[in-house]
Length: 312
Ligand SMILES: [Zn+2]
Image 1 (tube, rainbow, N blue to C red):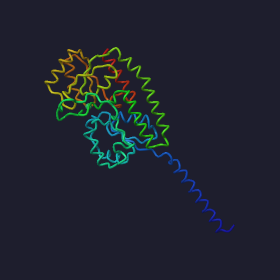
Image 2: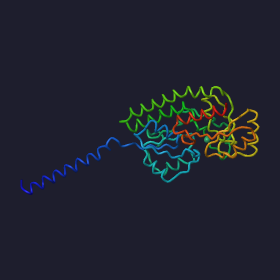
Image 3: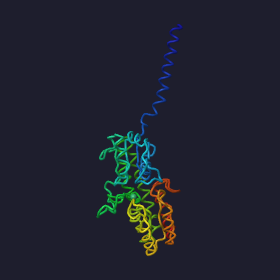
Image 4: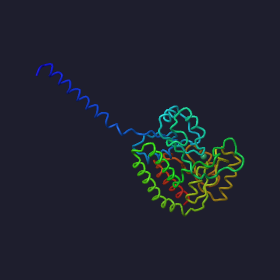
């Protein structure tokens, strides 16, 4: 073999080697392109993660200890929304003060209402406490009815179905995977529901107080009356005259617990608790808001346990 022929053979071998190496490097990425999912809040994020698992790249905008009505918008929210294939929001006015301006800047038509990439969780859900009279003040944060429906695990199953349908439409090759995960999630909730109901059955119709009206769906599901609030109306800060009324009502209804979430003023609740011989419970509507609540199911579990222990 001549020197020239040998060199050219070597070059061919090297070319083949580089070709095969690059195939090995890039081929595993083919078929693994994940879809970008944005959830506005951690409860919706937990459901998305249960259904999408490792097939989605998930960004959750609000943090577990944030006030969902007033999440502080960051610049990176806009780019996450711009790149998203799917957006899951609660709707019903929960994110009305912060999500619309971000969506306007993100300019992503895939997330328009009615598109497969948009899951507005509140659609099809019968909202409780829809205001009937005149607006209750400029600070009103529940103008369309109560938007904290995710605290009812039966409603969460319906939302999970909507999330699964969206992921199946946007990413058809993984449709069976999403559907199987959705079924597993529903089965987990169904299995837990009996235990949750049983744990709270003893306390049927008992009254509980809360800082904000985050609890009507949870209360309805489990037969409690969480109907005394430190806020005079949702979003209005407690006034001394209102708190005097609250203390009277707490004594009259023998209320022993006040639920306070991480972003609410615990000192106000402590004052009311002292005056009415009640206790303050550090609670949350979001996975991660208090210890022992890493996902949606453990959140409901923890809330049920807290209330059952507190009312004993
Ligand atoms: Zn609210």
